[in-house]
Length: 77
Image 1 (tube, rainbow, N blue to C red):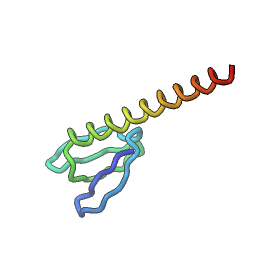
Image 2: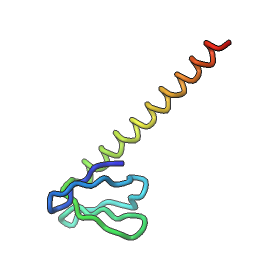
Image 3: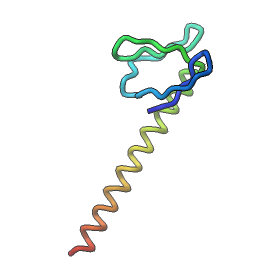
């Protein structure tokens, strides 16, 4: 999930798994998998970076949970 700013300044959060593509013409247009489009203030590079950071945070959380589970399993032995 990444925050985006519509052209009117309102902020919404978008499920980055549902983004089909992002283009600039000249405003940034996010095309969603369901056919909807969003006009946003962010550049494609900013949106890609936000998605990358979000996905990295998910991976780090999963690794942390896996480590905690293995520690707990080791303590019970």
